Image (cartoon, rainbow, N blue to C red; front, top):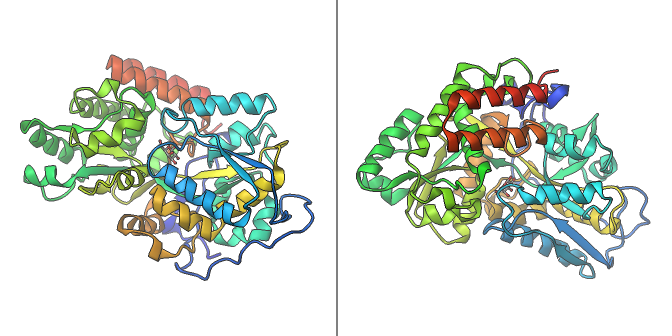
Length: 448
Ligand code: GAL
């Protein structure tokens, strides 16, 4: 593994009370040789053991991936698994309508984990969503041996391994890195209003939005039926307004949550909402991609699963830019899978995790999902222009963690944060929302 570079600092977010700042490795050059295939058949003893390739039985995989792009990506990883372990029946437990990045799925997962009925393996964001919700409570197996035997300690960036770890031991296997702060826009509509480049700041975006409005086009796609959607937009306005260093400070106690920039970000969100498509309050997160592709709204601030979804819809009239005010900043999150204690099909899960962490698995999944691989040795020929650009951005940008997607703060804060932003967009009372957000941050004891 190469050493840390200050310029490429990865501070994915301070980790709650631990206040851990994370730094990424400069990934090694792309297109390193493929990792050797997992060895077959030895006796199982610990997570490092390789169960028989002829394994049978079941494997239940729990996720909220039900939208175009994510479905194909997951199926592609299943295909890699099935080719190696054809005797195993995979049960895809994804529910439709998972209410955007988790929703009822996270609640269902919690119920099963607490009830001693864990799924064999489940999608979880690296960072606080993994550690605070599942690891600290002692519900996940330590994967140190598997990291060792699969060579992951050298192939995943150090900052990513730290995000997967608690007290120095890894508990989950990252399959990807997503970027939260992307502005997706309709190319033809942009050209029609005489704009030739994506707005770099929110001021520019409002000028652009007014031009669209003059032509009767809504500027911002909003899925108002899911409170988490606007909370996602808000985190990116917040980064733009307060800057990446101060944003990180919000989670380690160095920046106060009543900072005037937080209030300005709330005002910007409300102003941007006045440009939403007319039916936005009834649109669910899973329906938002059609709003963009149908031209009902012209831009959207969303993570790069949008790329996977739009490609899956065969929509091509779009392009992307960092969300306004965030050029040079990468708001990151990482999906991962782990091994809950007491699962029914443990050997099958160990093999699943090997696929998740393998070059073959990641290069099958990510080009469809719209994310970049967590591994630093992808076969770049499999990645399109957006993804190649994003692989580069991850190496050079300042990295901060997403609130909404579990990297920066524990789930209890995310829930409170979502509730505050939801109340903000419906009630439009900035002062009240500021008070509530400060209370939520106090309860989360950032930096304590
Ligand atoms: C994120 C998740 C992505 C994608 C997205 C869709 O939280 O990390 O993989 O599922 O939600 O809403």
